[in-house]
Length: 340
Image 1 (cartoon, rainbow, N blue to C red):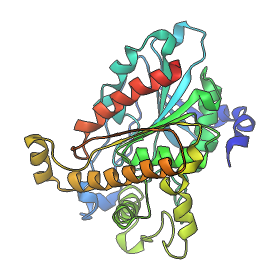
Image 2 (image 1 turned 90 degrees about the vertical axis):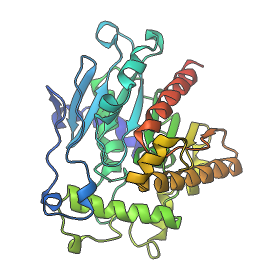
Image 3 (image 1 turned 135 degrees about the vertical axis):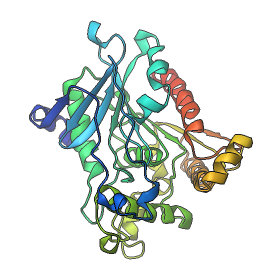
Image 4 (image 1 turned 180 degrees about the vertical axis):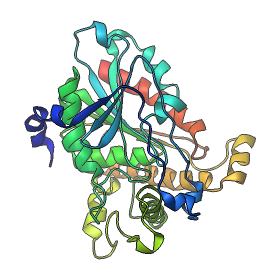
């Protein structure tokens, strides 16, 4: 839908883009959290920030973006592929840079195989979609503004073969949603513990809670004023909108793309997981949901005869303890794909 706008927008992006001199520092969460909202009480009070010679921060048409450049970017004249890496819920654009080994891992890649990593902000729990109530337009911003701006500002390979999109948790859903909605833009997609079917009851409950969290805890809207179906609309009367944003229902659109799936089951792997579940039972419940919907995606891709990689884990909960190894494996996979 937005593919035809990329070149037309490229000449305009400089006027709407601010390059920050330091890390993106998120604004404090609105007063809903301070007022003791039950939902917002468990939302982290601030996001991680990161600095470094390879890290740049941009604001593109109001969207904060982190960019991780190859180690040799400043001294080379090459063009680079781009991995758009989408963060999870209640995280931020620097979460991968600060909380995983992404900087070191990509730094160890041979120069000839290097690529740029771009992380746009997807909201507290915005799920990378244009909201039915008009309150957020993450998809329009990323597809129509962020991608053309990155291609304008950096020495990218501005083609489908030069772009991959992947994400963790909420970002895994976002990556698959963008890939199925805009298959002409991406040559590879990866979902790492992403919930990929928004229409099954358990996942639908997660999306409805995410709607409340985003509106109350990021937008500062009182609970009594939040439209419960603000993200996708009413699941009955707006069922086509829900289905259009359902990666499982649109799996056939990924044909010809490198597709990578991984998730756990929600079962504890060891005593450390048991301790985590005791303090936060949702860590098990959420991974159970994403594991089931990732299996659904595998089945849907098989039915659609879309070649893909599916790496289920027999155990593991929804936590950064597993996200970093998942990301490490995907980076290795992507380097191999782009080297082929």
